[in-house]
Length: 116
Image 1 (cartoon, rainbow, N blue to C red):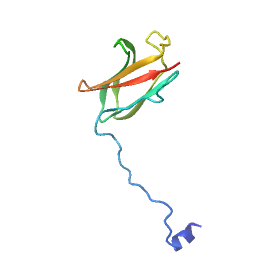
Image 2 (cartoon, helix red, strand yellow; image 1 turned 120 degrees about the vertical axis):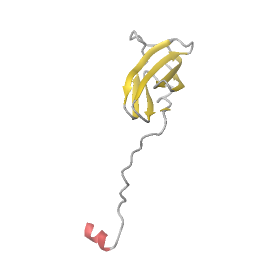
Image 3 (cartoon, one colour; image 1 turned 90 degrees about the horizontal axis):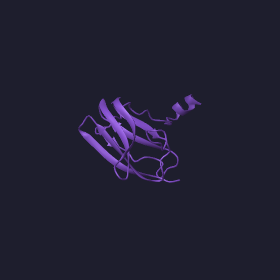
Image 4 (cartoon, rainbow, N blue to C red; image 1 turned 30 degrees about the vertical axis):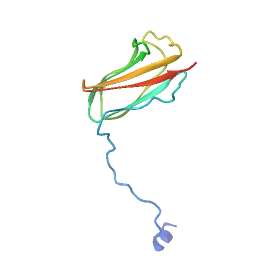
């Protein structure tokens, strides 16, 4: 079959050049799903190795949970939040805010909704 396709000069696919799809800037994506119950995924992109903190706060600004704190490699990262606080207790329905800090130079905040 391949010989027949070559004979008729039929293109069956195109090889894409292998390139790095590393983001050039820090990015904090909207969580998904949103609204969520019981958990949600938060994604972010890093252009370079970075010291990162990802924290969830309630609507009054009280810290609910630190989801990640440490060194992270460049590229996409996904963190799952199970809807629990630092003590392991399920939090109540409502609006929450998550904040990404990277290398003490980047900060981004987004809202999410937990619905029970």
